[in-house]
Image (cartoon, rainbow, N blue to C red; front, side, top):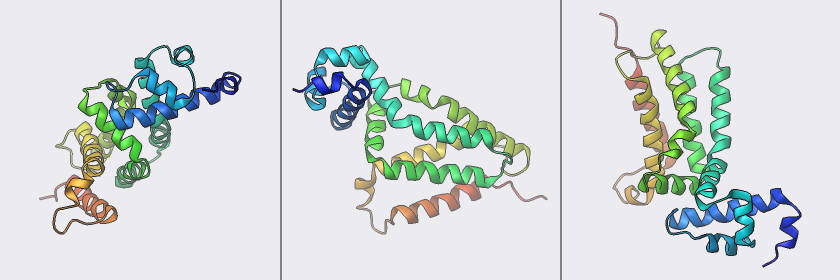
Length: 203
């Protein structure tokens, strides 16, 4: 194991450890991965992992943050800077989340493990984003863009759940007769989802 080079570059060492941890956590989940495995995979000593992250729990949290932080930050910025609240803001948000999962299959698997293992801290990481998204939906409801009889947080939750489940269960539902491609599914989901949010016609 060559630790000399990595100890001289702390940031490189952290990236090596995080990359190894992500690969192992994605394959095995949190519970079945040992610090020894992470050390071997990353090419550093266990003591160096403890130096940078403290514990396996802390490394798990850092791994999730590294996987999700860029997406969360980008979406927070877009929602914060929005000058108008209309249907396109939500539609774009759905598409960007779908593309994020489509481009990051490791994140899809990591999220599956967090859900199976009852990990609540992952939800804390994007709680502010969900809250702001729901607030933008509420503003659109007040402006008459969306129907007002549904919970704004449920509106956000619905598209997150549908997009996540699409990628997590794709190998299963790919066997169903007539199942379309990613693009066809996204198009159909947006049609149903956005139409369902339209306010009822005036009497």
